Length: 362
Ligand SMILES: [Zn+2]
Image (cartoon, rainbow, N blue to C red; front, side, top):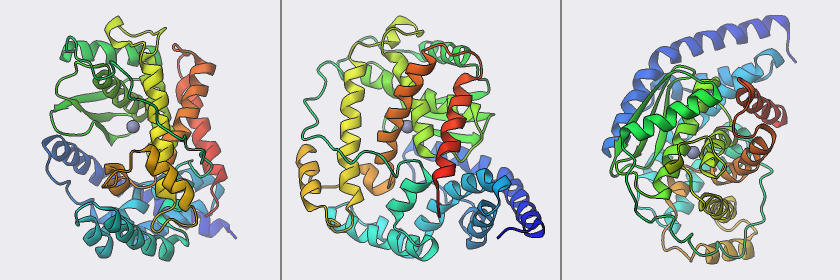
């Protein structure tokens, strides 16, 4: 029920909000990246990003076709912040990770998500991030760990990582400021300080195994995506870009020889099976949700872990995006090869984003 007037007021409110966040977010994201690399708790997101009125502005924008893409981008940014900022969610998240505590944390997240969006937190994450239709076909077993994937060899130094980045950036036609921070303890992670301009990636301190080189390439892939497209992408698209770049480790490759590995394809397949099993488990939270047999099988495939995986606690709803991302990345590699004409990767990723945006019914 959009009218010209309400479309105009929605646009003005969105312009204002985007402008204010563009001022506040870069400093926050830089501080977040530093805290992450040093193992300190992250700073609180800017208040503006956590306000109910911000959520309302994003939802108003989605009602108007010409603003919908920007509205979805804003919603992807702020919906998790609003949920995680809820006092009951924050209290549950501060408890030690255990299966009963994860059920409690899920109930707290779902209470906010139901109130604001009329669906569970996991359903919302899947919907916004292009993972609603990801396969539920989790494998019976993950298969043995890939022999040699964690075997040590010569370490890649900073110059070698820069060489890999230069090769990737030149081939895929992206430019911008990419800072590469090394951390012995932190999980590899990418931080988009300013879309299309500035990215910080945190990668392992010592890069001397095929697994560590994969981790570096994956985060460089997130950097490619951040420099190529506006922010607020569906996670499935962002992870697909990272997966596409990490697939450059699979010969034949444009990368310097030490960045490739004959084991990379097998390791990727196993990672996707792991994500599918975790997805099956988290879809059924908090209490099995009528899928007890499926959850039991998935947990058995995972080795019946005593405590939930880090991602289920801190990054809910993401496993299905990894599964969807692998399918998208496989398609990109088939359609574009390893040296796409300039601009083709960005165009293909934007098309995936648009396909996902059009599928969302809130
Ligand atoms: Zn990733």
